[in-house]
Amino acid sequence: MSQEKMIEDMVREVLKSMSKGAPIAQTPQAAPVAATQGLNPDKDYPLATKRPELLKSPTGKKLSDITLANVLNGDVKSQDVRIAPETLRMQAEIADGVGRNQFGDNLRRAAELTAIPDERILQIYNALRPYRSTRAELLAIAEEMETKYNAKINAAFVREAAGVYERRNRLRAE
Image (spheres, helix red, strand yellow):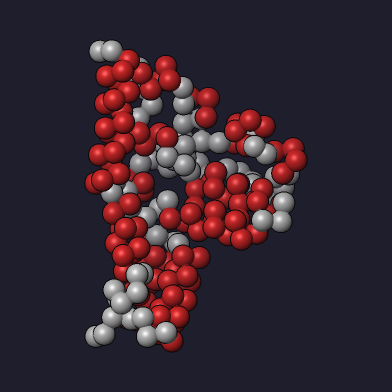
């Protein structure tokens, strides 16, 4: 099989898994990084260059394992190139360290969302559009995010959206 064909097949596999909403939770999870406390923006950023030993995929592959040769020989699959929640949390720590706290908060929300299947994320996104959901539906989504996916920050965001939509008459009529 030619290299171009193998790359083409891998791209198709990635796109297929995205369109199916393959849940990340179904892939083996890497062990959490021991301690992300104490990352220094000057010494540790960019992580891929200065601290590559800390970075792993959700399947446990090290950054050094993600090579074109490993893609071509089939050792790296599409699920191996997704970002791990631990990486997003480390990036959030770096952002906080340079005073970009809002960006850090966004990265922490993104870390939580990695546990939610892509298809469900799209459903939640659509439910959060004005006039698409009732207050009860939004609160049920928040409860699901918090209890099923341990996405507490995002659950709070959805609860806040329900309140804002209620105050601004942006909820779907029951």
